[in-house]
Image 1 (cartoon, one colour):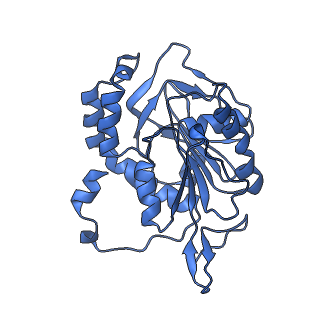
Image 2 (cartoon, one colour):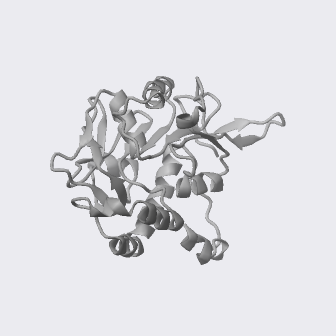
Length: 267
């Protein structure tokens, strides 16, 4: 049975035949080759079509999320403090999910843009440190109510962090960058990257190799070692989080051999 959503439309809508179908999720990306990665794979597996927009290249964002299950804004090399027109438009656009009480998830830059919209400071680490690799996080009691099993390390790729916006709830803390996850209503921001697939890890650590020389950053070898140790827990957290974020019913149990190990490794 579908769980009702008291704050607006659920993740499902009625077709012309009267059957339920999963509503699309709005995907906001910041690069020509960017993808929603593992997050997109998980949403498609849940039955949600993806509506991909790239405002940096002129794509418009919808005036309402009435016909969407939710929206996700991903990371990018730019800053929430940049004076580019598309950054200002994205910051302003966040009034839509906040006003309509629709599910929004900001990942890295997307979390910083939400913090900026809410009036919080977004800035580099005071000592110039970066998180590039796998780093520990510490869920709060509020975070454990949202999702009971958090990974103890998550994948990071950033030099800027943000203060906890006034009136929001802290869900997870970090060491060098204290605010790692927060929420206000149905809008969430996470500093880390559960979206990174194995292929993306190769690409990021190759094209962004200069980031690994920043203070606090990890070597390329440490990225891949960390993935072998921590990725399974981060993947499990993502699946559970997305189910709750979209107010989905519990996932149906499937046979263990229905997801070949090769396909899981490719993520």
